[in-house]
Length: 168
Image (cartoon, rainbow, N blue to C red; front, side, top):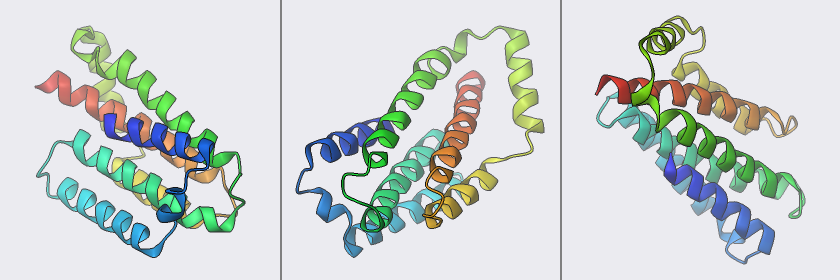
């Protein structure tokens, strides 16, 4: 999810510098682009036309754009969440990418068996997490719900990405 990391860092930098470009991200056109990108990502993921890592990245990027565009008018422009949440996403995704996903081909047999067991028997599949992320985008009153949902999505993405690398 390199694209998600770069978009998160870019958004944090734009918010920190109070760049004029931020006003464009809160327009109806930007929200429409985000929704279209999300729909395309979910459709190609559902149809299995691209690897899971690709559509997860597109979904996460579109959620980030929608989150900022939809939430910014409802909060102060200098709300700390618009700077710190994207940094948190970039840091979390970078850590799991560097420590787990990039090293998954070196997992021992027991770790692979446990990972497959967790992935198979997990009560929260990726479809449920996508739904949770979408619902959390709409609930602005509970501003920590979206970061929690995205964290769960990133953790689930990590499991799927590791298994895709192991199976290839």
